[in-house]
Amino acid sequence: MAAASKCERFNGLLVSHDINEIYEWNRRVCQGQIRRRSPCHSQEHGLPFRGKFLKRRRRAQSSDKEIKHEIAVLILCEGEENIVNLNAVHETRSDTALLLELATGGELQTILDNEECLTEPGRHCMREPQNILLAGERIEDGLKLCDFGISRVVCEGINVREMPAHPTTWPRGAPVQPLSLLTDIWSVGVLTYVLLSGFSPFGGDTKQETFLNISQCALTFPDNLFGGVSPVAIDFIRRALRIKPNDRMSAAGCWNMSG
Image (cartoon, rainbow, N blue to C red; front, side):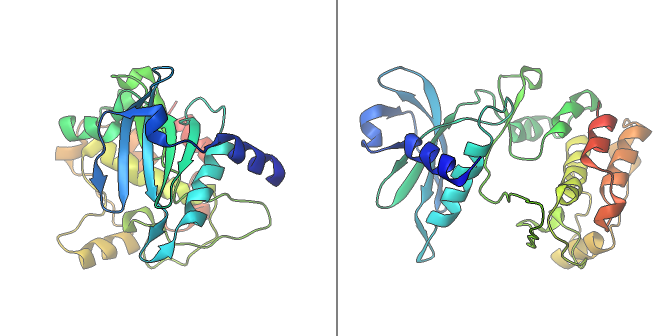
């Protein structure tokens, strides 16, 4: 989408009215400097959305650039079935509120908290990255992706080199390679391990031990956690968690193995 078209789309989403005049809030829960998503209903249409409130200043610095980046990614993804839709943007002097499609099933993490791990029939969850919402009460009802605040757009001819926010999503000690689809394959491998076992693949008793496990890619598959997991699933994890990006299987390879 051209820059001019994105600006026009952003202006079309921006609503000047007070958000409380249009939406009725069921609850607002604060966590740190980002207020968590909360269900809300339009007073005019009665349609449910969820509101994501973002502080426009964090640590005495403007965060408008990061917020507009997240909005731009959502605009680029408009019309994708498995990505939450952005319905409107409200700005105040202190906050920017994103009015997003409500995935009624809540977060996939809730199922993990209740059941500790998923069985292999739930492997279609691995067709999507993390930040996964359930479209309904069951996994079979479909999945939605959300939260693109730290996502990056990878363009041909432009190198982006950044360390991910969470240490387990990157092999510590490895050279920081330009971001690519292969960067995400490491995260897919970590998430698959967690979903099938309920544990981190590199978790140690201390941070230092965890970082050492990550840098050495020290993978183990203990029988008490993986006794009922197929060799194909274990091979999937091994082929995703390789230090050198070019040694990992491609996104297409992940798709084929999880089919």
